[in-house]
Length: 139
Image: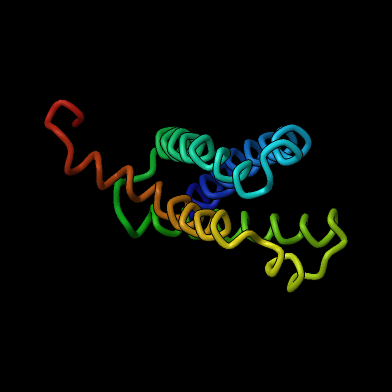
């Protein structure tokens, strides 16, 4: 159980840290030129790669068994940490209420963001599924 908690914390920290750095680039450089929607949509594929790499690193580093019983809680705990941190930062740094922050999200990039949260939560488990059902060379 301790290993799964550490894996979830590490997974959260890697993805949140990368997102924070990308946000620091996106907001001052891309948003003024391209707008919020386009800037956020450009960032999404990069975050998808970060999610895959972070999940793969955490699964290997913490030697997580390829079972839903272990890997789904890792993704779920990491998701809870990620959403909590993002909402806290939005309220604290942007001086917005929680409701105002949610209402301010672009409907298109916000929808893609919600899908990415699902990808983030499921990726540790999904990597195990891909490995189990992949080609024999991967075993």
